[in-house]
Image 1 (cartoon, helix red, strand yellow):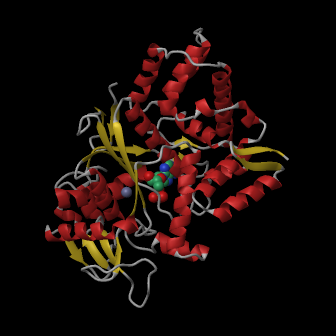
Image 2 (spheres, rainbow, N blue to C red):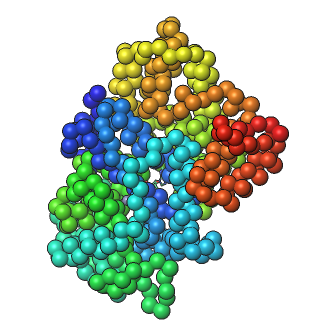
Image 3 (cartoon, rainbow, N blue to C red):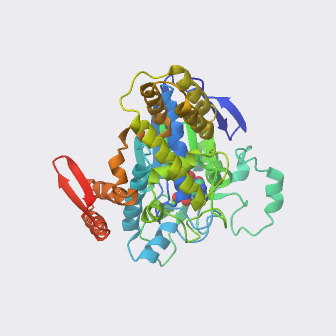
Length: 457
Ligand code: AMP
Ligand code: ZN
């Protein structure tokens, strides 16, 4: 199966060739855990999941690493403003460490509800402070840094190709440098280490060769991706907002530290937008997956909706489009379930599907192939086996859908699912709260030897 991916670094569709035969190192920027993820963020993780599943379908073993940003991401990309975590702590009245834990768990629950495969490695920025300090020291020894009154900065003018990923124009940047940027030498310079403000005890701070403080946002991804995947690995991904700043800076750090541009392919997912604007956590109001569950939607319908658009086009979220996704998904589930047992896969249809996903993850065309097969006059058992094989990439969990789920609303079943996850994670208060919510809605929940049953009270 030949896979072609659109690489932002070269602005071209390139055939995927792994650095090591049969293996793929893939790093995806994870969430900043100062608040819940919104469904826009989750669209990016669905895209990355489809990418991983496509590579796995092609026979690769994917070493998928996702980080958790629990320190250092400031409210402004220009390295000013407050730390998002400390701000989140003030907002909630909890400690920065507590909110990191709370929103990390909530994020993992969202991924499970969307049937997103768990990364092989999760890594937290605060668990890798020593590695980040070491990288900053290497960058310093190589002569790329300078110190201001508030931190250690990377001098981007020292790199010949700074901003190549984003096609940043060096001349334009120089003229832009007349814009006020405080003690920074160039507008694009960024913090590697920030000093804790004097007379103020931060909740998250560490000793370093430069004084007490905390790492800049970008160094964590360089340090952790290299630790788990090596100096040059196959694929780095994230949302498109990361192209001009975060990923450009990760590349700058790697070029200074290891002389590589970190990853062989750079992939970026486009945004989920609402009627008003792009969805953003910092704007305060946003749709969570839980918001959809509260309204009675099945999270996999949201996944289906994501699959209807190409990951490299923005997707406007509307309730009508989510309703259409519900209808389509339920029709597909009912067909597949109704077809009874499975027989052999029709390799012709499967390879037509594979060609579409392998062509830069063209999921909307791949779905069209699925629907084409539904209508095809082939034996039901063959159609079922083939669509279930396709579902290894789509991730709609068609094999496990049972009509009984229809008797209890999907939202209630999802709450029961979340409760199960909460119990697994020993989050007893959350599990109890979910149980009470289910009871209030008029359903019973029983934990028996055959698992948890939900039915009308
Ligand atoms: P954050 O938690 O803000 O660091 O973002 C987590 C991931 O979501 C990153 O890969 C972002 O690029 C991505 N992202 C942020 N906003 C959106 C959006 N509206 N639609 C799609 N992806 C997004
Ligand atoms: Zn990152």
